[in-house]
Image (cartoon, rainbow, N blue to C red):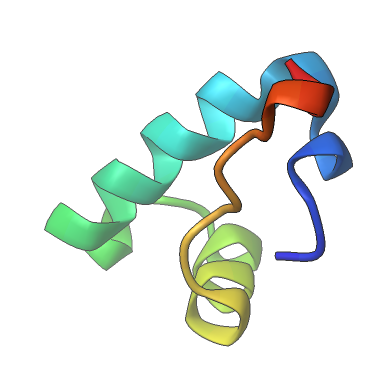
Length: 50
């Protein structure tokens, strides 16, 4: 994904959803599946973004 700031304070939720997606892709909404399939893992926050 472009940057950790894309999701702001909800980055933790996106990370959690990605972990859920890795275990069972059908357990997340279609839009999230498409995003994760296209973009891969959400970016890790950098010290400047935390």
